[in-house]
Image (cartoon, rainbow, N blue to C red):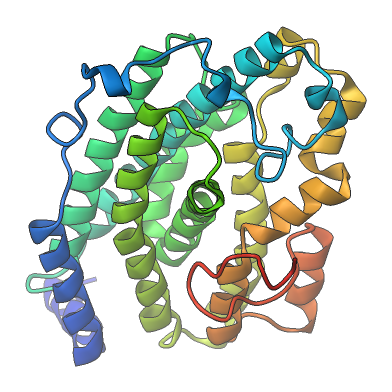
Amino acid sequence: MTLSHTSAKKSARRARFSQGYADTLLTLSEGSVNRRFDPYLDIDWDSPELAIDRNDPRWVLSAEHDPLGATQWYQDQPLHRQIEIGRWRQANAAKVGLAFESILIRGMMQYVMALPNNSPEFRYCMHEMTEECNHIQMFQELVNRIGDDVPGMRPGFRLASPFIGVAGGYFWAILFIGILGGEEPIDHHQKALIRSGDATPPALLRVMEIHIAEEARHISFANEFLRTHVATMNWFSKAVCAVAFPIAMRWLADELVKPSKSFAKKFDIPKEAFKDAFWRSPASRKMLSGFFGDMRALATDLGLMNRFTKLLWKLFKIDGDVARYRSEPERRAA
């Protein structure tokens, strides 16, 4: 490919962006400038109010919002054991979250380095990666202060993560589907906990509040990115995205929410209880499906929900109602 051909291709790619999309990116970028958080300026880690109490009963997992917390086995454990398991699970969730953010950064950096000059996406992507770096610091500080030596990602995902991020930069539509597959379960769970009013350790609550505030921009961008780019795809590329969508959602839900077998071994969780929690019982399946109401709506809007792909969503146990608006609570199902 000649330099002139490459330049022409980049110009055509830049020209296809609508003014509306460029305006949205500018709004998101200005939001990142005017309303941002620093993990060491906006969290007073050493204040008495945010001190970590390892025996705080607020570490107990929610029976309504955590699939393991919903099991009878967990609820039958003595309080000190519920606290220990819940504290470990929250610390490990933060460790998994920061690892996912690192994969996102690798893929997005690979993507933006190939963008042409004056691309409206470049600036916002850089803002988002800066915020994700802050989230990594914030999550790791929380893990350090909780004090449990958690492993984070499951072994297979840990080994594959460097390659996933780099490959995602070349398969950008799949990258952004994967970004949503990782961000939506965490965002949904954190919002549900805060909405419920369940007692939460203050340091964990503060971390969730900051994460939710900034992830709103990140999720909005990924949605708009896919709306803009998928609209220009040929039928084959759209078909690939349609199949990849439910696969990515289910795979990443497992990687981010389902702990490794070493967790079950560490806390002597019976196989049947572990299977019920992830994802055999009706309660856990409802939680799994509930993670993706917004994504089912997006896939429908993008024209990626057809007779065949609907079967995939159902096969992976992530089918269900389509959200009527972003972050709709699950009151309708209730």
